[in-house]
Image (cartoon, rainbow, N blue to C red; front, side, top):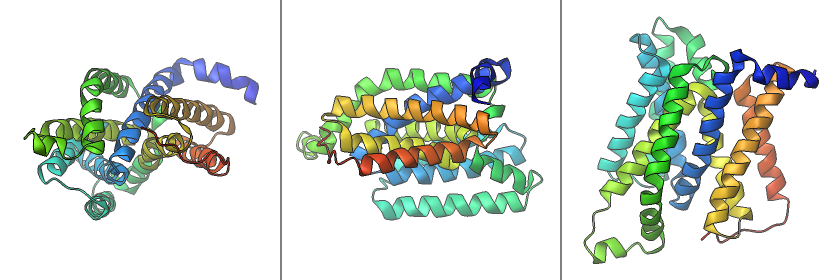
Length: 270
């Protein structure tokens, strides 16, 4: 069966989904590294839940899931910045609100419970031009914004009193990071699934922070882990006729287990 994988992967039916997921698999680990550095990785799970809920609300209103999810996640990211939400308690409430809204809308709308499960499991193989264009736009935005955002985030993390002492505003880079993360998670949730998107945010960064000798290598390793994990999951799911999201999560968690028992120790990642 595995000899059929290259032909399947190159089939026009899978070409757009494959490229869409690959773009997200390269972007999400970078954002995950920044969130881990800021100790805000739980915000990613909260935003993913809110994105799934707003995607389902969008479907009920006749909007594509990726559009409804993006709009809802952007609002959530902006509110997070405006309220200066910090700490796991705030993010835990985001998860609970998103989870409750997702299931209630699924149970009380014409789109039905099956589409709610589809958002949780992911719809990568049904990704089309809209998802590809939005993923490409997000990657292009990240390439443009991250060289500006990253030094500010690093300085605020390691020298938190610098902005205060120099009376420099921080809302602009916080808003930029929150909106980029929110939009990326919304598109990823609509294509890779809720937990698949969160796994790509959290697991590659978690592994990279333990293995990489520097911040630069943390980013490189996170991208490599996300890309390799995505490729392995895509091929495995096709070969075994399994849903993509759970396969992706299983492979990334297995990789994290190998890293945890590798004895490499914890990197400074600075």
